Image (cartoon, rainbow, N blue to C red; front, side):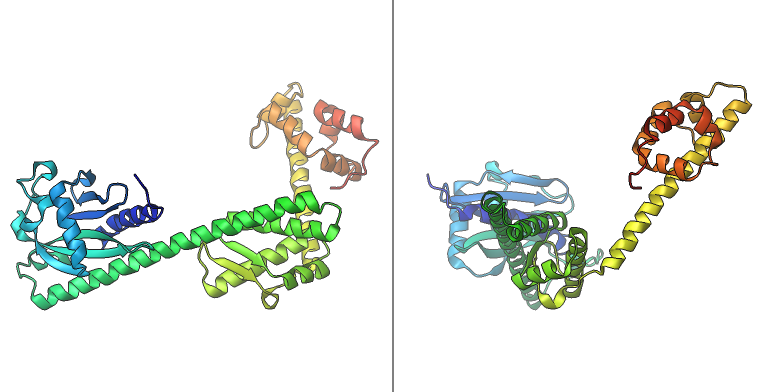
Length: 383
C-alpha cells in the first residue's frame, strides 16, 4: 500500500479548511469535509456540527462512489438538496447522525465546494449547510428564501474564500519549509566553520555573525540574512561585539517596520539599510548601567544600616535574622548573605570610598565586617 508524500499537505490543508468554514458566515450549523486517502484510493471524512463539534467519519462505499462521481464533475461549486446526500441519509446507519434541533434536513440547502489542494491538485469536497432562508445573514426573523442569483453570489464568494484559504495555507507551509531549510544550511555552515576555520580571525567573525543571526532568527521568528558587503562594513566600523549586535538588531527592526514584515519572512540586511550605532551611545549606556548598580548597592547598605541601628536600640543582638526582620521590607538571613555575596565588589568599593558612612554595620554587623576584613587588601575590582 503506497502513501503519496503530498497526502500530508492535503490532510493538513483540509483540516485547516474545516476549522475556517464555520467563520465564513453566521448561522452555519453543519459542515462535511472529505479529502482523498491515497493509501486506500478512497476518502477520509469529518463532520462539524455547531452543537457537537468535530467528529471523524467512517466513509461508506456508497459515499465513496458518490464523491468520486462528484470529482469527475469538477464544477467548483454547486447547490444541492440535503436529502440527496448519502452521508446524511437517515437510512444509512453507518453515518446516521442526529437531526438538528431547529430544522429538518429538508429545510436546508447545501453548498458543495470542490476544492483542489496540493501539487497534485487532489480534490477535496466540502458540504456547507445553509438554512433555506436568510437567517444565515443574522436576520433571525427572516423567512425569505434565497433567489437563484443570490445563491450564485454566495457560491462564488465561498469558492473564492476557499481558494484564498488554500493559497494562504500552502504559502505558509512553503515559507516554513524554506525557513527551516535555510536555518539548517546556516547551522551546517556554522559547524563546518567550527571545524575548519578556528585559526583565522576573519572566518571566526563570520562564524560568530552566522551564529548570532541564527539566534535572532529563532528568537523573532524571521529568517535574517546579511549580504557580504554589510558584513565587511560591520567589521570595519564596529569597535566591539556589543556595538555590532546593537547595529544589527536596530537595522533589522527598521526593515521589519518599514515593510510590515511578518514572522516567517526572510529579511535581508543590505548596505543601504545598515545603521552603525555610535560607540559613545554604547559607552553612555554602559556607564548608566554601572551607576544604577552602584546606586542599588548603596541603597542596600543604607537599609542594612537603618535596620542595625533599630536592632541595637531595641536591645537585641545584631544577627542577620534580626537585621532582616527589622528592614523596611523584611528579608531572611540567607537573602542578606546572598545579596552581600552578589554585590561584594561594589560593597567593598563603596566602603573604601566612603569611610564615614555606614558606621554601625561596618564595625558591628559580622557579615559586613567579615566581608571587609577578608577582602580589604583587594579593592581594585571594577564596579
